[in-house]
Image (cartoon, rainbow, N blue to C red; front, side, top):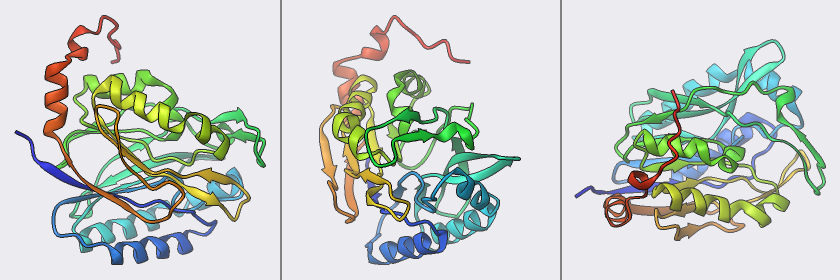
Length: 274
């Protein structure tokens, strides 16, 4: 029988400057009561919600500085942290949207670089989104061991591509992490159905930390940070609040659901991912 594990999700309405957002994170961490192994989950672009790709590119050249500070927080607080995404410099005019996972000793366990980039037209104040203009797409899928089961890493727009999560499941994922900054328009239409579908079809918990509210750069994000069961039930939902959500999830639920309905065994369409 697998144990219960503690998950904390911190919604954010991130500003442009990393210093402001890091200070906000520290303030939120101070309010948490942590007396057991805990995974802290942050949204996409939590450290800096820039005006545009050029601003994010400039910030990406300082990534090492912030990664070191995140490591110190994890070590001092004794927590694991799925640190949403931060821009990490790749090459001239390009950066990765990097989702970094730290352990409770402050070690960087793995980095997942967002694979699917959001190039779309949306009926909101921004109108056009072109992540590929400055963001370098990742290539490597990351599923890693942790005290919270095997974690499958993904980011925001990835959630529309179920093949990624099928590979996560084939590689033994128990929890799917989906840090996001969904627009209000697409969020109202698709956010919860997409997350619930990924949970149900892969029989995994889904943890989705989200940006929420109107930001300094003029964008508006949907919110609704959630913890979803492998049966597709929404266990926790922050709605439009910035209040962190917390849940002790029972990993044995995964085993029970998979034993009762062994969809992975029945699946005739394997990914053939190498």
